[in-house]
Image 1 (cartoon, rainbow, N blue to C red):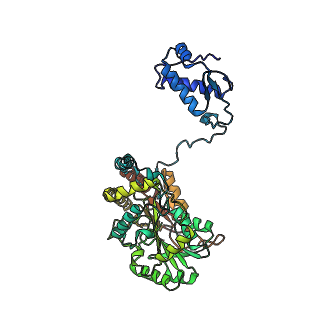
Image 2 (cartoon, one colour; image 1 turned 180 degrees about the horizontal axis):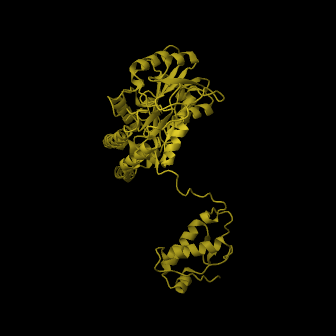
Image 3 (cartoon, rainbow, N blue to C red; image 1 turned 120 degrees about the horizontal axis):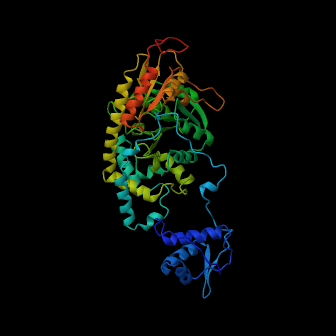
Length: 485
């Protein structure tokens, strides 16, 4: 029987039983205590270490539960064979551990992705989760409805009708962990033998998903009113993916005339559909909210997709898709057996968050917060020279700055980088009609994107001040012309 010489530290924050447990476990892991070797009895070890027997019992119980030792009746404790045990090595033991970035070359990042997490209602969310778990709802740990919880789908229908003018019933709503998952489901429902028309510039992540899924893809240039329906008609596409309430990244709000043209295009032939991505319609700063395209659809042609990632938090991972009634039949045949990817606890938390009025209050608060940030940035950018024009400021949490001084986007971004401010080129959102094609692109002036959601008001002021220094010189011209070109 091995004697265990353990140097205990009574002043340590680590409990005595845990110190004993760690010592024995490490000796077994490194082979100092061999398999089948007997350990001291709890009474003997307690006497030797001058601790209570209950402390030794706690340590042995932990070792027993993890499979490091076994207890043989009337004989005592023995070390186990541990070759088959799952062991996590400390990070320091891994070879060639990738090093973390030691800081950034930017002090301020105008990323168009992300939200203001400082304003997330942590207390309310925590309270709702606690209340749900206190009710001992064991059924919430079972698989639920593949489409998502009925109560939440019913709540979402009510919210969408009031806030966005969407007409739907709970059986038309499918919940999923993010828009990516819903697009995968949609590919199964529709099949991929379709020609998909996408705007350019556009949300490239969705483009890549459709490309990987095997859809035929073509691109339709965006003008001042959104996707050009005349070019859509000539493209041969039978599905159009659009963001009419706030086109990403241009920030265009599609007017009613263009919306009706788009609905008319879809209604002309069976099998034509419009995918309406309504990703951040909650945040508007000028004019009245524009109802969703789906609300004006009388022919069941609009597939409506929305998310709570922008309005609450990306990690909530709850998105929703409203299917036209004709596609519900395909859903039942193709994917009704696929389980929901959203935790039922998260679904019921969100349901309470909306029904009890917290979501409405949160949205109003976030509109105020984003509105202040929007106004601060806009007011600062007004100080730029006349060759800079701000666009896309009516909604969302980003805007664009267009340059008419002959400089390229690369030069503009480089000047901002010299001030340790990161901005993003619009040209990165241009897409082509299919793998090898050159991007279809309406001739646009060099433009950069400024997202302001993740920055504080003070940071926006400071970052904008640096951009004024970078871009504010009236002599700032590029090699393709003068500042008034």
